Length: 89
Image (cartoon, rainbow, N blue to C red):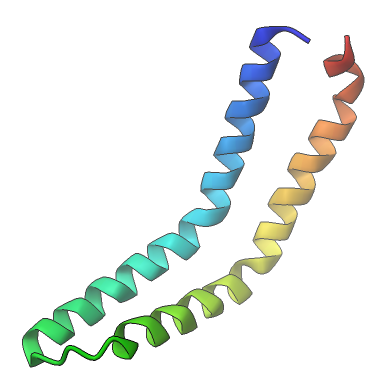
């Protein structure tokens, strides 16, 4: 296994991680921003107001994206296993 192969495998793994986590992180960021603006405008500083809606939104997006996440992980794993003999050289 060459250094270029290791770098490519690492790059592909990081790309898959970013693709899978992006919808969840962006949802949390968006909901947090909206709630932060709402708290600033109304001067409400309740901490549970920030966490509970973010958790609910992230869970909902996770449930909606779960088939896509599963397909992405399965295709990446299948690609790794199919190319395993090439990596062993």
